[in-house]
Length: 377
Image 1 (cartoon, rainbow, N blue to C red):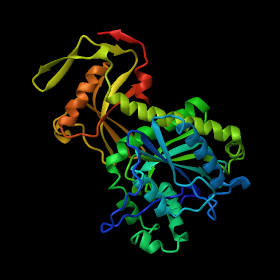
Image 2: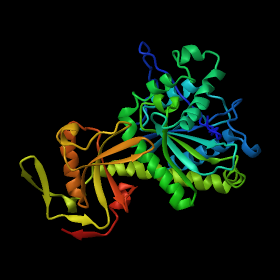
Image 3: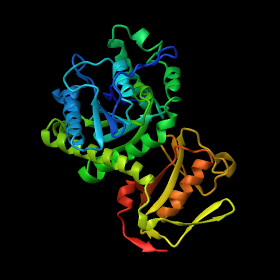
Image 4: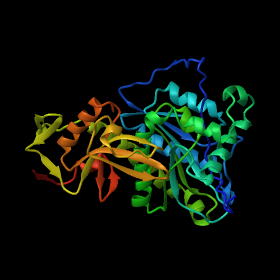
């Protein structure tokens, strides 16, 4: 048993969908728009953590409403709230809201607590807990289902105290892990670079909320209410507005990066030369100081970078953190070439792969990379 146990106030939110149960869709979302579901943790008789006398449920809601107010003014987005008032929403209902909306993104917002003066932001994606501390975090938050009257029926026998139950959660969200990691990286980078908040990193744990939403999903911890300085900041309008602004920017960057993956400016339409199985692009511009790669997979398994393990692809690389591994194909400063390499990856059996950009070995929004000064090849 570790001496320090983090009591993070992650509300594990959402729905266990039984194999015999078909979710009815009453209101179809406008799929011309990018649908974002914003989830304010806790609510009503569930206050979340009350570090330093602050209420997590109130801070989470204020930040969510601030994020939503800006996105709603952008014609590209449709915003759906799991709650917009101080109301208790059962966990399985939150997931149902997100799935019914056929959302493109799910963002859950919370605040941390700790017995010490720990501080800093962190963003979680679904994955196996990398250590006992992460498991305890998930266990504490998943146990919120016990507040519900009919939790046995709603969650089909899920036991928040069972490591086996947690392990079972990770399988169905694997399809969205790549995109979730990208958004989580954007969020943490914005907090750190724009607001100078301490980043505790992108992490993984077995949260029911992230499992039950069938779309890229992240759970954001804004900071620790139990830290005297950070709690005061998060309880202030200034702090809430600043955190909301960074989250908004991250969501916009994420959407625009997805859009950019499928867009090539006319001035950069490539001349393609096929040579055996390799597609080459000639006479194009490169982006100075930028490295483009195709992210083809992510997961907890450490796979050797051999062509036979990746459907015949070579030019492979990977990044490891918190027990997760991200796998990449290709490496170039030429954007037209990387888009052609993405087509190769799709043909090799990676239909959900996408282009990512690095600067100084750190992932940055693709749209930001494309604004960088170019040089002729």
